[in-house]
Image (cartoon, rainbow, N blue to C red):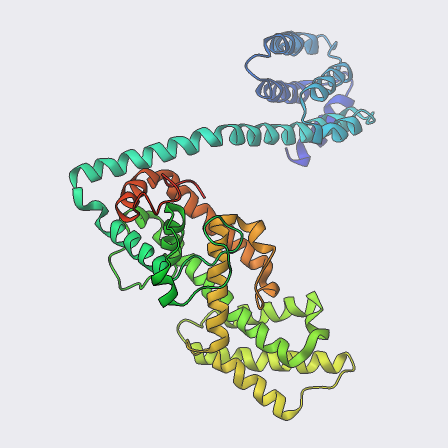
Length: 416
C-alpha cells in the first residue's frame, strides 16, 4: 500500500471521534492473508480467525466507536507467530515492540506479505516433484503417439547412440574413480581394439550427450529425442567454446606473468571480464576479437606488474605473449586443443560422478575457471537428466541392440 494510505489511516484514527473505515479495509485484507496461510487440516484456527475478525461484527463495533484496534493487532501478531516460518520469527517479535497503532499495522501488513510469499514458495516446492513427474509422463506419451504414426522416428537417435558406442570402443572412458574406468590414461586405439573395456548403457549415453556439444549445425540427422533441447544444447556449446578460449588465454598469460599476479583472484577476475567482453564477436570475427584480447590482456599484465613494483614484460616477452594469444584463434592451436579436451573430460565426469566430485581433481589449466565450469556442468546435467527421465525406456531398448549381455555392466539406462 502507498504512503498516502497510511497517512490517511493515521488521520482517521486520530480524529475525534475516530474514523475506522481504512482500518476495517486493512483488517479485511489481513484476515484474507491469515486464512490463505492455513493448511486444509487447520479447521479450528480457521473458525477462530473467522469469528475474531468477523467483518460484520467489526463494522458494527466501528459504528459505535468500540473497535479496539490495538487488541485486534495483538491477536493478529499472536496468530502470525503461530503460522510464520522460523525465518520470520525475529520480524514478528520486533513488531511486538511497536506501540504506534499505525506503524504496527503497517509492519503487520509488510511481514504478512513476506509470509504469504513463503507459503507460495513452499507450495511450489511441494508440487514440483508432482509437476515434474506429470511433465515426464506427458512428454513421453506425446512422443509415443508420434512414434506410433512414424515407426522410423527413432532412426537418428539409434544412429547417434551407435556412433557413441563406436567412439567408446575406440577410446574408452577416461573419467577417474568410476566403475567403468580404472585409469585416467587412455590406451592407444590399437590397445583399445584388442582389449576393449565393457560398455555400459550409462557411459554410451554420456558419450552421446557429449557428442551433441560438437554437433555440426549443417547435420540434419539430430536425434529425434533431443529436438526440443537442441537450442539449449547449442547455448551450452557456445558457453563451452567461450570457456575454452578464456581458459586458453589465462593459461598462456599466466606463463608470462608468474604466480604473483595470478595468485590474486581480483586480477584473474579482471582478465576474465576483459576476455569475456571482447570475445562476444569471436564466432564471426575470431582473428579481430583475439587481437583485441591480446592487446588488452598484455596491457593489463604490464600495468599490474608495474603497479606491484615487479619487472615489467620485456619487449620480446610482450611480443611473444601477444603472438601466442593471437594463435588461440586457430582451431589447431595446441593450448586450445588441450583445454577443449580437458573441458570435455570434465563434463563426462560430471555426467558420471556429479559436479562436486568432478571439481575435486580438475586437470591443469581449468582451475582458474572452476566457478564457470561448475555452472556449465550443472546446466548440462540438468538438461541430460530430464531428457533421460523422459526417453530412458527408448534408450534402453536401443542400447540392448548395441551392447551384448556379456559386455553390459547395467541392464537399463539409469538416471545420471
